[in-house]
Length: 570
Image (cartoon, rainbow, N blue to C red; front, side, top):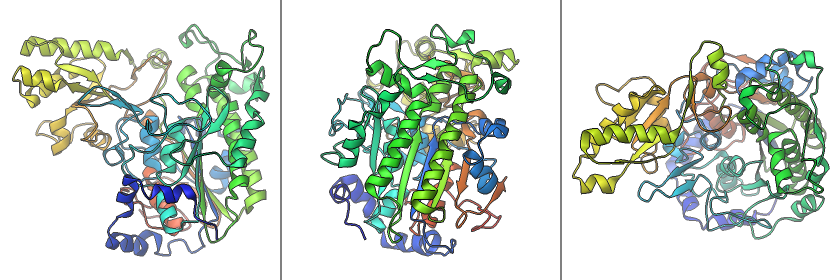
């Protein structure tokens, strides 16, 4: 048995974790008698649960290129594991932080409190970052005020938190190109390591420890990112193999363009620097570094080597999201990036088979959200859509409110796809909050890009006669948290987007909600395609059962209908 992890002991003094550990005894016993202790999995817990996230991977890409997969990357799941053809998120604002918070808590933003990548404080308008916490800094790297350093804003526990509480010797390690991709799935009691875009290294923060372990220092000292300086991202396959995706250099890529092969670093750069290290994120190379760091973590932390203390390794691969934002999921660059990831996974699985043993670990893979097509593509297909600027939307709403109430700028700002009203100004003008909110909703719905909008009163109370049961209302409620969300939450119509990138995500439409949900582990998850509708939050109770611990206390997911352990029912 291992000694208890020092960061876990320190975390016991943190108020949020004290609250999590204070779950009623009856609830703990119920969890053990229900999911975790019911014997649904006859095999012992795996020594290592590997949880993989491909940031921004829509399910449609996995199936569109299935015939081009390597024998043992994604094909391991599709041919020899269990995969779910209808896995959808059910919250409205499908962005990276909300998805990463949901997966291993089993809860949507209305419980996790992670309503977006960032939001603005209702009282002050100050920007809040989902994992920002100025009480902590990166170890050995510069830290900006809004950098992600802790899970302070995450209001619920993860599977890893439950595992560390139940089996304190277990280790939970989260790794990602993005701080939120590592911190949120790792939870309150795990340890998160993030790629530093200014130095090409990986670091954790002082929330977790005072200094890095020796294996982290050794990894960074070798400067593995530098080997990609002036390297070329070349397509894996002959040009004809990419006929089903859009050619490079589309006019809507913008001035920066985009085509393969693509050199990392500019001809003017003599040595690697921040511009080069940051550019690696929109390529296969930062993901290769994340997986190399994961291998170092397995060796350095001796993950998966003790049968009595199961461990969790979380790796969120960020590159696909950057690629899709810049060039779209329909581009050849995204097509090739997916194939590059496939070969990386094959190499990872080979190493895991050799170091951990194929019968000793289980793998789950999903994504935090999907992706919409670029509006230019949708328009060319006759689907309509377009782009709307947030500032223009706010101006339009305020213009309508001023016409009705005679006061300018009653809507103070936008926050996490919601309008926030100026409470001080409403009080000064003696205006009724709900009346102004209703008017703001009407003003939103008059805009060509807006498909639905709901007020704080409706979301808090469960709807009104006109709105209850309306499209996206349930998804909106799952995305809305009363403590941090805005006053009039809105949904864009299909194929409309907000933001400066080539394309994006963040809607309750199927192209954003449908993601891969894949599992492999012959002793635990069986084999086959499952068409029963499921949700990524169902991973939390499933992995908890597999690890023989209770389900996280905030979870609203259901055990996945795995062919081996759960039969075909749901």
